[in-house]
Length: 118
Ligand SMILES: [Ca+2]
Image (cartoon, protein in one colour):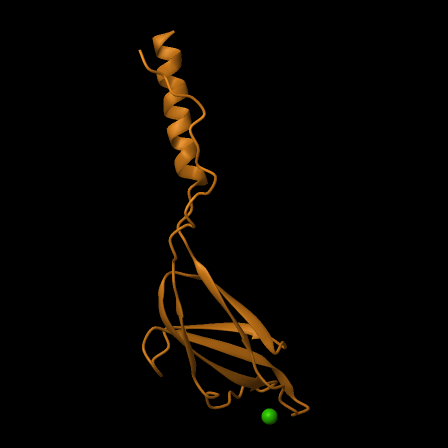
């Protein structure tokens, strides 16, 4: 029985880890469409330092995009356009924003359901 409980406990511990995911925010960007006939799509650039992007995402031919899995911090974004010859534009204007991990709301409706005095 002890062995079974220990096993069960291990399983529950592992499950708890498996279902606990770290906080990650997201940022939804939008830009004006290009008008070139040979346009293929856009790339969204992401960085934590202004004008120094460490990641780019080929978002294809859309003009709004949700950048996901952002841990708390300040982020800078810019967009480029590229065409069928894979020629890429300069960066758009840069935009920035902060992802914050707020604490949970205080629980409400706290009450005593029983007082036990011996
Ligand atoms: Ca072109």
